[in-house]
Amino acid sequence: MSRVLVGVKRVIDYAVKIRVKPDKTGVVTEGVKHSMNPFDEIAVEEAVKMKEKKIASEVIALSIGPAQSQETLRTALAMGVDRGIHIEISGKDYELLQPLHISKMFAKIAQDEKVDLVILGKQAIDDDSNQTAQMTAAALDWPQAVFASAVEKTVEDPPVRQAGAILPDVDALVQKLKEAGHV
Amino acid sequence: MSQRSRVIQLYKTLQYLGREYPVSPEKFRVTCKKTFKNNSKETSPEKIAEMIAKGEYVVKEIESLYALKKYRAMLKRYYD
Image (cartoon, rainbow over all chains, first blue to last red; front, side, top):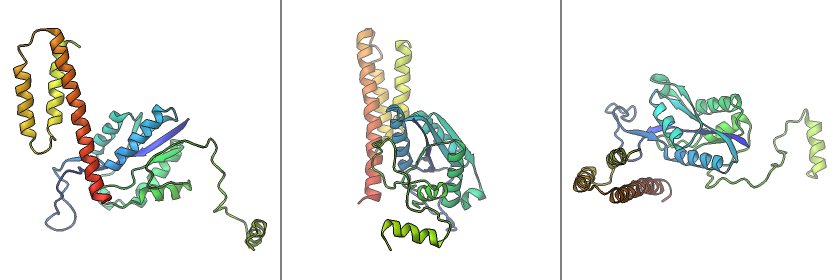
């Protein structure tokens, strides 16, 4: 049984017509309908499905953003998530927030909450960065699968990671390459 | 829950869902209200139960309609 962390982002609703601010510094967000990022919705659904199949023991939703992000978390809770974590960042800080910061926060939460799997939507429909998931995996030094269309549990024990091992010196590297027959 | 409160709950759910009804949410709202009003004189519990079941079916249909609409929008934006 594993613990699953899912990311949910509060974005402008997909059906809203986006308007650019007159001073061209961004898009109008005040008084505009917001909802959960559709791709994150898929992530939440997948996590809840895993819980129903008894693969996951607990599903935690994490949202980073202004106070209104709570609504997004509530949506996730209504979809069947067990617990929600909200990291409140608002105003100027939120405008400057980049996927790198988000990924570091995700990595920290993943470690603190001792989760075994992080599921994220492939991209957000507002900035379309498609970076958070990959960078989170890098920050945690965990294996990753991107653009997944389905999640299935097939192997009980995944193979131990071989590539990317850190070796003490060049001699050890040469030795290893010789063993593998590359030199 | 009593039948009366179930009907009220159903009406509220439908009105809430109707807010995002494609093309004309207003038309949906009015039609929904009319339908409930037309059947308000119904007294037989069996018939009312039948109508509630029908209403709950409509709720599910609307929910899947919205899900499909969103899915199609995403497909069009990112995969075409």
